[in-house]
Length: 515
Image 1 (tube, rainbow, N blue to C red):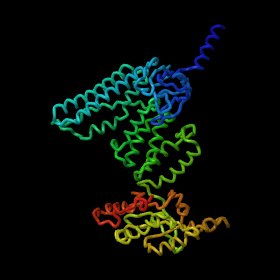
Image 2: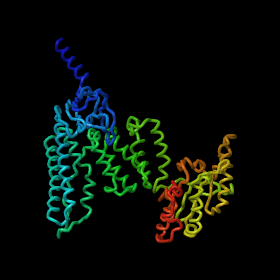
Image 3: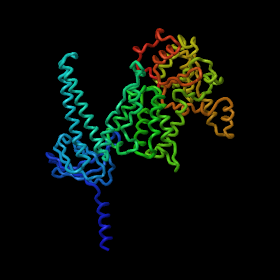
Image 4: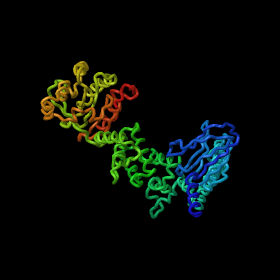
C-alpha cells in the first residue's frame, strides 16, 4: 500500500507542477501583472500571465511548447530564453534584461545566453572596426588591417557556433544555433585549365542547400524568430526571381517536404500563401491559388482539410476563391463571355475574335475612375490598337438604370471598340422564374451562366479591371495602368520606342490604375 501511495503522490506532484520558470529582476520595484510570450515564426503571442512581486515572478511551464519564450515586462522589455522542458531560473537587471541576464538554473540557457552575449560582443568589435575603417583609404595598410580584424570577428563567431553544435547536439540550443548558420559552399568545379565551369555555381548551391542546416521535422525551431528570418530570406528577390512560376516551383519543393499537421507545415504554408496573396507584384495571386489548392483545401485520409488551422467557414470561402481564380491567373485561359452589345440584339464573344491581343475591360458607367480611363482606352484604340489587330472587349454594367447610362456613355465618348453587358432585358429574362425559367433556358442557347454571372466568374469586386490576352486567349498581364498597358503592347509588338500617348510621367496613379 505504501508503494502505491508513493507512486500516486509522485504522479500527482508531476502533473500539478511540471517545469517552473522563475525570474528575479533587480531594479524593478513595481508589483504588477507581467506576461510570458511565445514565438510562432515572426509572431509574438501571449502564453501566460503572472504577478511580479518584489522583482520576482514565476510561471508554470507545463502547458508551454518547446522553443524560445520571453518574459515580457511593461514598456516592451523582454528577456528571451530557450524552453525545452526543463526548469529555468534566471536573474537580470532592469531595463537591460538581455545584456545583464544570469542563468541560475537551465543547461540550455547557460549555453544560449553565453552565446547571445558573445555574439553581442563580437558585433560591437566588428562595428568598431567598420567605423574606424571609414577614415582610411581603401588601398591603405590600415584599411586592410581593419578589414582583417572584421573578418576575424566573423571567424570567431563561426568557430563558436561550430563548437556549440558539436558539443551540445542533444540540446535545442544547438539546433537553433545551427539553423542560424549558412551552409558551407564547396569550391566551384573547374575545367582542366582551372577555369570555373559555372559562374552561378556558388549561388545555386547555396539556394539548393539553403535548408540543410534546418531540421524541418523539428517543430521547436518554428517557435523561434530565427526561422522566419531564414524563410523570408529564401523567398526574397536576392534569392529568386520574383515571378509567380519561379516562386511556385520553390514553394512546392519546400512544402512537399513538410509533414502535414505539423507546426512547420502550418507556418510555412500559411506564410507563403498569405504573403503572395497580398503581394503588389502582378501575377503573384497565382502563388496564392496554387498554394491554397495544394495545401489548404486538399483533404487527408480522415476527410479533414490539410489547412487544419483555418475555421471551416473560412475554408469554404478559400475553396470558392480558388475555384474562381484558377481561371484568372497568368497563363490561364479565362472563361468566354457571350453577351449582347448596346443594340441589345447582337451577341458578341471574345473567343471568336481573331486578334493578336485582346484587352478584357470591366467597367461601370457610374464609376469615377472608369469615366476617366475609358475615354483613354478609346484614344489608344483609335490611334494605335485597332490598326495593330489589338481588340478591346469591354463588359459594362448595364442592369436597370445603368442600361441607359451605359449606352449614353458609349455614344458621348464615341467608344468604337466592342461593348457588351448583361442588359436590363437579359437580366429580367434570367431572373424570370415563371414557366420553369423558360426564358433563361431559351437564352442559354446563345450564352452561358458564367457570362450572365460575369462578376462572380471574373471576381469583379471593383472596377475598372483589365486582363490582357494573347492570340490564344491566355492571360499574359492584368491590373495595369493605362500607360503600362500602352507600353506593354508597344513592346510586345516590337515597337518599344514608339511615342507614347500616355507617358508614365504624366499619369496620375489614382486615376489610371485598372485593378
